[in-house]
Length: 393
Ligand code: SDX
Image 1 (cartoon, rainbow, N blue to C red):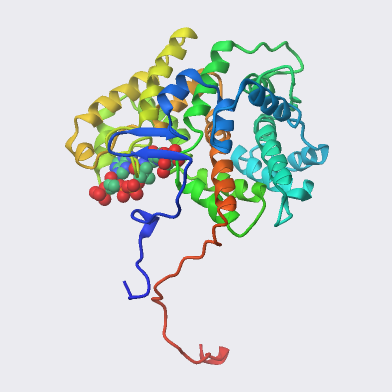
Image 2 (image 1 turned 90 degrees about the horizontal axis):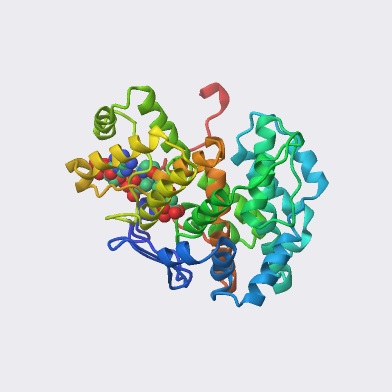
């Protein structure tokens, strides 16, 4: 502390804003979107209805929801020139990298997003466009990765069914969406929709605070989410569970590694900056995993390994004193796997779910006229010194 500023690495004890969107209570494991509990919304609502709620602050009437859905449906198509950007990527490009580039490119295609004093109508158009186009771009990133032809959106389908069809349909066969899969996906997206000032949302707010476009801000959020400590954890969890399975399923050995300070291995999908008793989303997703696998008749051994890991961790002093519990990422990958989504696309699924939250937070920050984010520092570098000519170095 230098009298000027207090350094708070990772902002563990710093509030960045006031917000009316999401309420978390880390001690009690409470999560609410605009005052509605995540348990009720996961059970009774749909992802687009929750998106409307987060962005507009109220649950929509039937007419408002119908209007919102039809507007989104009629923006799902992507400019053909963006398809040629996609064609420029090698097929081993990670879908998150492709997605953040394609989203960033939207600013070049839709100048209304560039106008710093953008009208409310221009903002609403940008919001509808990104909500509509992200699933198309995500499915296209996957098709690029596996070298298959892309599928165009099918406006007769609902949001999740349309995404699944764009992901898995092939010109060679008929594709029918399984309603069990579509509804499992819809529930997962609801559970990811917002989470107050997490790393990627804070990034969206910071980028947007310079009055950059919504698309540029969302692209920043996608890149922040990619990290294995944040949204990338769901992919890391499955890779960890597969490694444990390949290693004979010895859960205790990996628990020891997670506790060994000299071993960089961490139990992915465990721990949380805010939740110190349990992550309410993990509880719902764990139950949903059992339901979906039972309905699909799938017996996935890594679900048993995951449950075994949770059991051992919840009775282990190291984890108990550090309040490490399964977080949202611990079980979600098991459902994605069961519905056929490859691990390389898990964090993309997180981005699709978190999009309405990023939008709502960006909109609130701009409507509140919040100042550009520009923190201070404590300087620890060299004092003043004269330039050294090359011959003297
Ligand atoms: C998400 O912020 C959000 O809300 C995020 C998110 C959202 O919806 O946006 O909820 C989504 O990102 C969930 C988190 C996904 N990440 C992971 O599962 C990666 C593994 N988890 C950790 O890296 C960690 O728990 C974090 C990043 C989630 C939280 O880190 P913190 O709050 O900075 O805590 P920390 O790293 O300081 O850890 C505290 C202690 C340390 O031990 P000590 O140095 O005190 O002895 O707990 C240990 C850590 O070593 N620890 C772990 C651990 N997580 C923390 N030890 C083993 N395995 C782990 N997973």
